Image 1: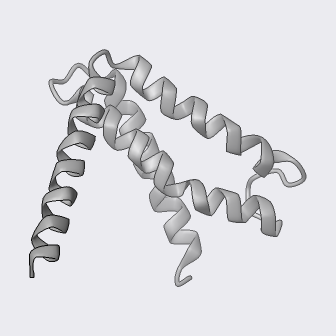
Image 2: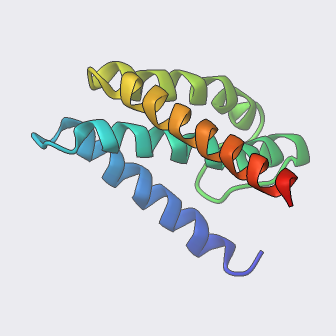
Length: 112
């Protein structure tokens, strides 16, 4: 991966910004909660890789730390939804729209 240190720094900064967005008084809090949950899900495979491959991450403790972080990520996703009432409903609405869009696209492709 090119520039791994910068990628880790950028994803960490993004997590901090999104986490801050959860507590900021804003009309976008539901979207921020959804974006944070999506981000945590998106970086999960990288965290699994770090744990399985035993990758040392500078500034973080080694040993069991990467393994302990994996189940906590599910807790963080749940926490993002819990912290902002209505964000889970928004996620379900977007998931249904995405599902309908995929089904419509499949139908279009099978007609050809």
